[in-house]
Length: 188
Image (cartoon, rainbow, N blue to C red; front, side, top):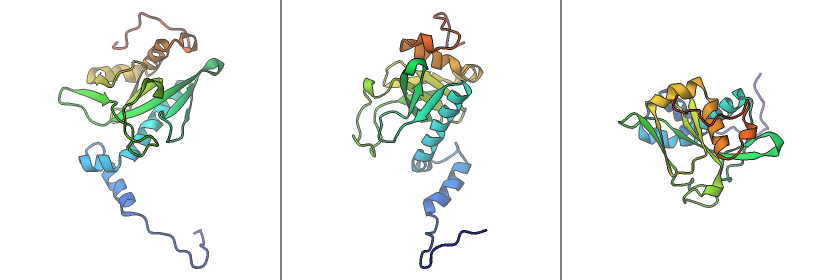
């Protein structure tokens, strides 16, 4: 059954960008740089949803925050502790086989405009390698993070390890299921 519209109201045609998005994203990650930029918002949402999926599979509760916030998710830990998560995605490796996450600017559409991230903007960075379907969580404050391709199998095998390491770095070892072992190696 088709929805009837009020007399005199016609539905707008689908924007050209929406039609082109389906075709362009069908070839992801083998897209032109222009298409990656044009569809960055959709890919960013895909990265956020992957973080949601990982956190949900780990039994964690995380909630989206409004776009004007300087973080994308809030992770709720026991005893009401809130951890702010910023999500960043990468789609291709460098020539050396690594994924580089540079944290230099916020979106120009944000309420505060372009500018560097500040340590008070978020607690944990969720680095998403969307083509590999993996997330690396870090509470180490740096403007540049590098994930080597060799780390990806470990992130797949144990998606919880980097989250627990980030929580431990923040001093929330009591929120880690089963406790925290200081001798754990994230590269293993």
